[in-house]
Length: 146
Image (cartoon, rainbow, N blue to C red; front, side, top):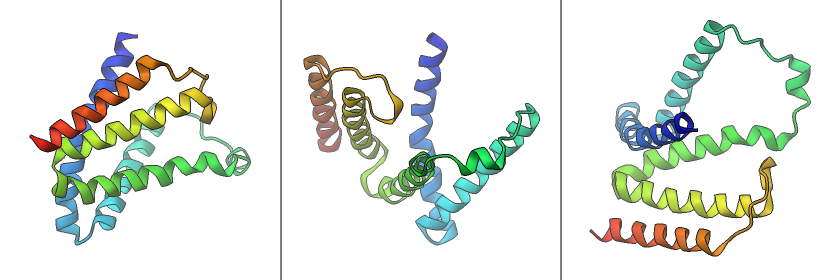
């Protein structure tokens, strides 16, 4: 379990760097959308290389074609997130941008858990979760103010 928690922390820790690097890439590439394209292309090439290196079996095209349309939307959401970070990070700063993103993530996650959406096991929205989200909102406001 600790390994998973550390991996989650590491994934969160690289987000401000990714946002900053991609914002600089946007300046070089001429637009936030081009920076997002380059970012996703580099990630795609890396993932293909890793899958080939560890010799993962490739899914059958028929299996991929049978996937419900909503399962493909993660890529759309990823593209929106990366592009939003490219646009917002120079304007808001890393802490405010990610603080607000975190509030959005936790609010959505609590609702997703409560209703058991997207295949998650339902977890009722408790007073503790609501207070936790309220504290995150307060933290986001404080980061923006100071």
